[in-house]
Image 1 (cartoon, rainbow, N blue to C red):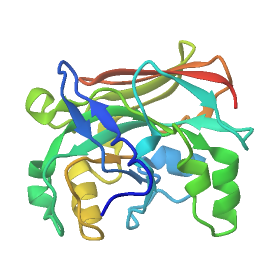
Image 2 (spheres, one colour):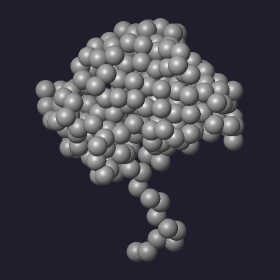
Image 3 (cartoon, helix red, strand yellow):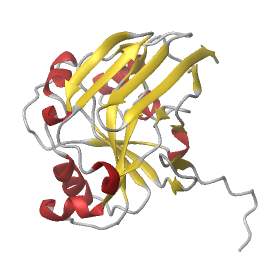
Image 4 (cartoon, rainbow, N blue to C red):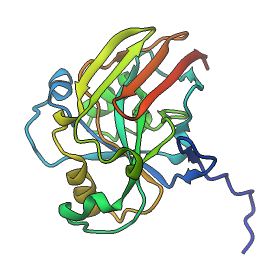
Length: 231
């Protein structure tokens, strides 16, 4: 049957060194996956079962773009993250087989309206308005696992206007990449084009209009985002 409205374009993630793109199906996120960040958010970093939340696929923003300071917040935060790109779907994926479902990796920034997130958290409400707002998911061009292997270790860092705000190693993830993929696939069926943001290290903090925010992950390059004027 014909649609009564034109279908929205499919968000697409660029691939490093290629004209091809990855059609993005969903952006899934792991909450509090570095111990030090869990502590700075006032939570216990023990290995309780991980929890997940989502951003809409059209929240995707490419490298080098400007993101307007979003409405209804006075506390926009940066969160440097490793992003998993699912290439082969599946449900109830065994941890031992999880890496075979990953196409590759990218550098991401989980922009967060922290005041809205914390207000929702304190009332036991969903985080959607704090996490899933327009243009809240800057992600750099992806690299295939075939070209960069699977990053179990490596420096992850974030600077604002050249000043380091976040710095850690991927080995500090509470839940590893294979564990994340396996656990999530036991709750929902993963599919090609699903992106998984794996959590952020300690040091999250505010951004203001005019800030230039750069996330770097060893072996995956940089992601630079400029914060524009308020909308």
